[in-house]
Image (tube, rainbow, N blue to C red; front, side, top):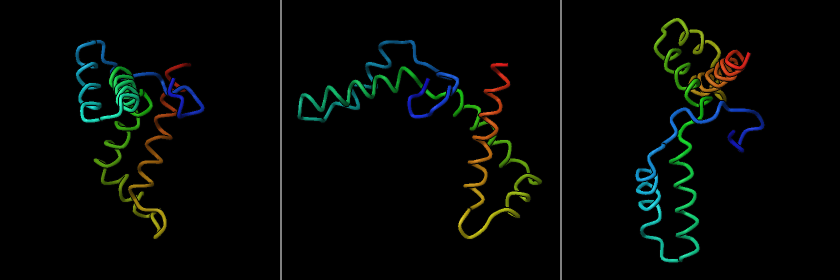
Amino acid sequence: MNTDTPFDDGGPAFPVSDPQSSHATAMAASLHIEDPTERERAYILARAAAVIGMSMRDYFAKGAMEATLASETAMEQVGNQATKKITPFAIVARMAYRMADEMLKARSA
């Protein structure tokens, strides 16, 4: 579960199980950091991110967003809802995450 969200985000969609890949990613992220404590911190954060991968919620939202953007009818409706303060892309992003949340609910039912 992602600790940035107050609910279950579905867990990792594409976790990296290859320790060499996650190590290489973490090394690259910490390579040019001089301070040993900061270098270790950067390594740990980068390795954790590489191992966890994208959440299922993000993956579902990505699919919903792509489908919405590909639909002329949906984008016409989005355009009708847009204002100066709320852009069409903000509307699509919010819709995508609402759809993703519903998909997670349906998945756990």
